[in-house]
Length: 133
Image (cartoon, rainbow, N blue to C red; front, side):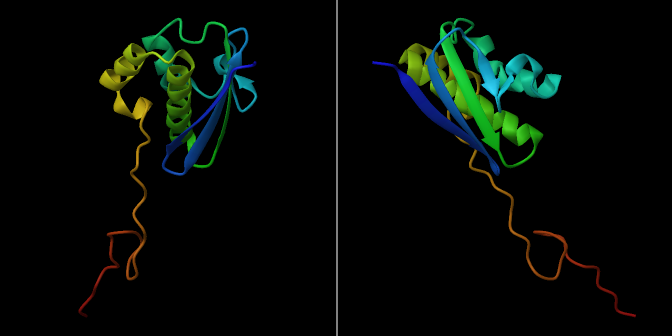
C-alpha cells in the first residue's frame, strides 16, 4: 500500500495544499523546486520546518500547490501545509512539540482576516475628511 498524505495551510486569502508521498526528498511549490521558488526571504520562510527537523523530508517527495493572496501570505500558507504534512508523515509527538514551541502558526492556521470596508470612508476605519466651510 502506498502512503500518501494530504494537508493544507491557510494565511489571509492564500491556501496551500500539500501532498506527501515516498520518494527522493524533493520539495516542489507550484511545480517549481523549492531551491528556485520565489525570493530568498520567501524560501527561508517556507524552509523553517526543514531547519527545525533537518531529516524530516528524507525519502519523502512533497508537492505543494498554492493560490490566492500575496507573496508572504502564500509563503506562510506553504510552511503551515509542509509542517502539518511532516508531522502526519512521521507521527512523532516530539516533532510536533518542537514546531509548537518554535512558532504555533507552523501547525495552526492564522485566523486573522482583513476587516471589511465600511461606508463613508476609504477603508475599514478611515473616514472621509469633514469640512465645515
